[in-house]
Length: 135
Length: 135
Length: 135
Length: 135
Image (cartoon, rainbow over all chains, first blue to last red; front, top):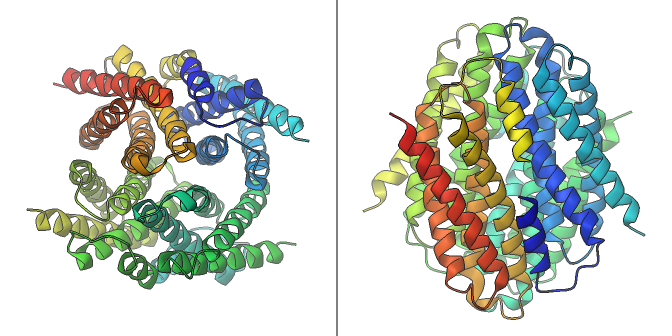
């Protein structure tokens, strides 16, 4: 996966005005987080007691949609930082933090929430670093 | 479409802490704008001379993804304004404005861009009004 | 919404080898159904007793994603029927039927499921008619 | 990425009636292919001569949406094979084959199309194997 992301960025036909490593890390983190949250929403819906997990399902589903859109917008502006890119990354950072917090709250009871919280935290960090690299 | 959005909000089982009319308008505008931009990207790709329309295709595709995600996040927090809702609406406002500007630039040559610019402007206005209603 | 869909199709730069009315109806139905199912998933998650509604949430979320993708693929091949279009419409028909059945099963207890089942049935019918028009 | 997919499946609370390895491979392939196609669409739009690449952009965008939806539907039915799963996998197989063929046609001119064709072929193969495992 990471190899494919790197190869696609290396073969982009125009100059890339991003820190390439941070861009690749952020794309990989968004894609991983979207899939982890998709799985975690499903796992929560499959738990014996779904009642206390409603908020977690919502946070997961938000994260799936926002991370997926973030990866697409970032990819579409591989060549330069569009004003939209910044706003989308800020929304992604918030979605990942909210989901990491929610999942962490029951990580000791549900192992899938622990795994998912890790993916959310990695994605939040990757978004933050990419945002910090914009001048 | 508007009737269905209204009916779904009217039958929501918990209290809604939004201005319902503004919420409905914003949902309808996001959904309409996503579809208009999806069509406009395709129409641009079908024009005899696609070369000057690349930027428009990108703006359209951004708008499709951001408006779709905005409608989903807004819907998922029908009961209350989540911090994420605000950030997503701000990203949506930017995506719609950027696409409206880009489409307007060749609205006289391409009728589909004129129609699409209208949908983008309506969506930007609906996002702005909903954002302004948050206290 | 319907007006915008019609206007975008009317202004498409190349010939359209579809029955235009059926194409417009199907696009409008997919977009309406995606939004109704998105709302219904959220309403189900907000019900006092979410336990018996898990299957409905899953059917709703499937329908959101499949209808959204169907509208995009249909739009992208406005000019002609791609082999993919047929397969995507068949998947959409199944997603809408499954969700209509599931929502109907508790339509008497949950008004939002009744509204959503109606949108799903209209979308299934629109997909079926469009599929039947392909020769 | 693969580790996260595996960990999420291993921690799923209910029994999984799939061949787990084929499920994991297919999820990883869908997610990789969606991102590769997203990048390839952008790279095609950035080429000096975009005119002969319109069809490739469309095939790429179809693949992005269909692979993303396939991963979501597959994930949502981790516990069992829903009738929808089969139809979505068949649509995904077609989208990946069409995009692999289109990208291969100019793989010698555009290195990004070569990389993308590889991801599409891997995804088509993973969908085919998973479909073949259903009895």
